[in-house]
Length: 442
Image 1: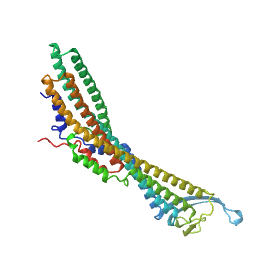
Image 2 (image 1 turned 180 degrees about the horizontal axis):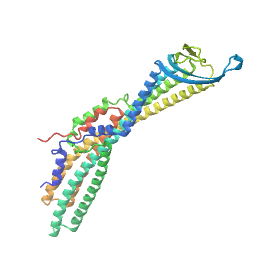
Image 3 (image 1 turned 180 degrees about the vertical axis):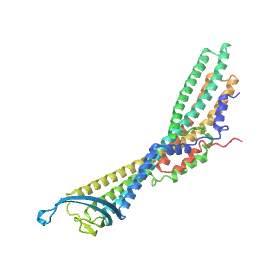
Image 4 (image 1 turned 90 degrees about the vertical axis):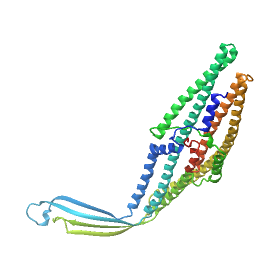
């Protein structure tokens, strides 16, 4: 007779029954990014920098202004003018003016364009990094929920097995066929199994609620881990990705740090332009709409080309240049620090991931051996050749192997997610989706 525990384990591994619709890791992280307020905040910051560039470009175009003025003048004539009558007089003036300003050459303005372009790039990488942070958090929570769910399935299987054995031992104990020690042992085992299951169920509820909060999804269906997907080809696909897609040229932390250097260099050039002359043109036209004694003209037009040459500014420009140079050196040091840190993390990640893949392979073999061993002990126990203690030991060994196997899958998944985040290659997440991918039962 084979135990129900063994049967349930086989069903769990084969994954022959399941829900048709479920939430994959990719679904979870995409939803988290879409509804994240942090991502939206960084998006608006990035878009605001684009408008900052448009503002600078706008200053290169002709600046045309119109104005309408009204003035009232009260004055008293000088008696020496020889005029008779009341010397006091009051007049009003109305005028219409148009003014045109045009930049011809302005090195400060031109270099500001380069500054804004590099700043946009910097904010873009910041926005993408925020998306990665949210994705990493969502994926970590998702894989934790997935891991707990499968732990619960295992604990339920174990509890079912233990309770059946408890019932059988109680019957045998009532007939004095087993010792009190055997009876107490199975009773303690059942109590412990119930406690472990209760703890994991509460943990699952808490983490599942957190996943709902992060993704903002109305409902989430968590599947089982499909251990059948952990084939040799799957492992080779993971290893192939590690070998062929481990470049850091697209790493967002490095790209942002590199852009910070470019931004600082452009700010140095912008500061230096404070020593350079600029050339601009100004034209204005005024039409007087009323005639009075204080106005000498019916209209007035003026055009001017202005060359501004900085001569002495109290050292302010030189200090600003030095400030930006120091900021550039700081950005260069930060870049080297980020690059070294990312390279170290990637190297460590690859080593741990390869080790975990090797561990998974061993767990897979151990699981097969554990199932065979439990089946043999069960048959021997049914024939009276093995004790209940030996049967429990075999059952516990298989349970521990399966438990550690799923935990190793969880660890491998987290390491692989870290790898694709470091290499900025999220499309490879489809490999992790395969861990929960199931085909409809025919």
